[in-house]
Length: 462
Image (cartoon, rainbow, N blue to C red):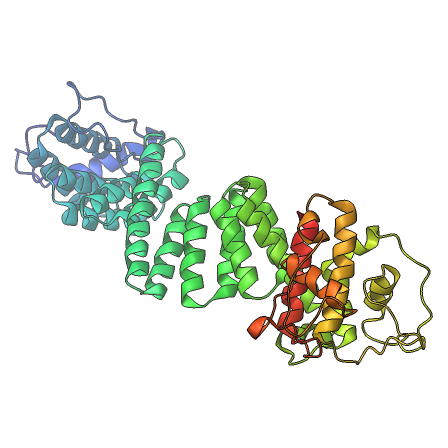
């Protein structure tokens, strides 16, 4: 029997300890159960330490008893005696890896974390899933400031022994701490313009806390700055999936789509933002995206209007038909005029809409002449007729242009186009030119036509 007060070297009668060990092996066959955690006589000094449990087939009863007594020495605070006995057990039976774990815990008690890791590693070399050594190694690594490695060891210990419930809370706390450290480093890298370092930091934080939506959103912002729109979009979507109420993630998605000129997708994304945080500005953004989508779907002739040096009658009809679609649709339509030159024209549908509403009239010879240039006189007459449609619906608004008295140096009140020009100017849709002239025959540019029609659209929506 091993004496509690004597080291495990030789017995006092001078016989070799190995003879005693052999004797114990011969009587060990009756031991089959794992050794239970020993109960110290007083309150344990290191209650958080996990007892290095032993299965019976690792050694004879006397060796197991010695292992228990060494643990009791440790829990009583006598690390010197614990070291002595654990060391002797390892010397006698090198394969008895629980004693190596015991030495690891004894080193931890002495605050020698580096030595503790070495002892735990020796135990794990014999049994890679030995939970007490994994738990102890986690403690030692934590003491060394190696949070990520400690977390990995604790999780491995839990996987090996689900009964180590005390470790679960530690794992959760460490995950939060580890994630915060990674987040702080990632944010610092992003602020310094080190986007690849920031990206790696956020991915590491996400690995620690994969359900945190804001991490994906912040990663997406870093990737946008780095020019990786595809990854940014994927991670912003992941953030929105994890937290559908994350307006900033939804806004990021919308802005990425907008930058990619994916107008329809951008409009839907801005709608999603507005559903979470209603805003007139966001509604306007969604409408603008839909307008861009509609614009991109237009024929090239329409998309070229804004920069055109002159505007054709077909282009003006298209502008009016698109921007005043609802107003024209509500107008009392006349029977469609017979026009022989618009059947295959790209603006045919809009030419039909404006002629039926009476905003632009075909020529007496039953042609529309879609390629003809629009002069200021032509635009003034179209604007005047559109103002008439608006006046029918908004009589109070129409008071400002119902009885115009504009004066033009080159356009007397007796001129047939005077009334239309004066009405367009009084309504604020058109403006006089230099020297208070109107210049009836001056061609209209694309930007001038777009400006006038946009002002008509604004009046129609008031």
